[in-house]
Amino acid sequence: EGAEPAHAAQGGERDYPDIIAFDSEMTSTPREKMLGRLFRESPQGVRLLRRDGRVEGYVSLRRGVNATQIGPCIATPAAGEPLLCDALSLCAGLPVFIDIPCDNAPAVELAERCGLRAQRQFMRMCRGEPVHDQPASIFASSGPEKG
Image (cartoon, rainbow, N blue to C red; front, side, top):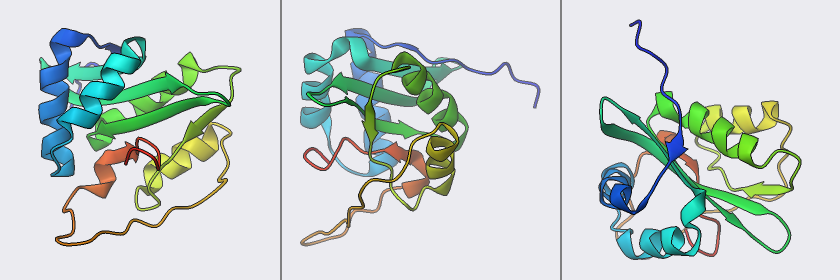
């Protein structure tokens, strides 16, 4: 294709509507309240990747008591790796937690290549209509407490 590789950049308040719309498209879930809160709590941790002006993915990082939590990271298959690598580079030398759905094998493999190891597993359960998201686009969840 010959396209210039895209790089993650700091996201800001002006980007939030585009990020939220992208997230809704990829997850089939209205998460604007949860995302808005995450972005307000850790605005310096919002990173996004755009190509030709269109959001291709985003990642959020937030400092915790024991480690930096990476996630959510919602991205197209092409944007997921650069976003996760960017987030991990920002946490170089620091402990990190990242919750990756097992269904996204490329994300799991990338994390393992970067030296992370599985610590626990989660099972997604629901009541009512199941969510019809795109697991290949979920490179990291927000953590078990946020979804």
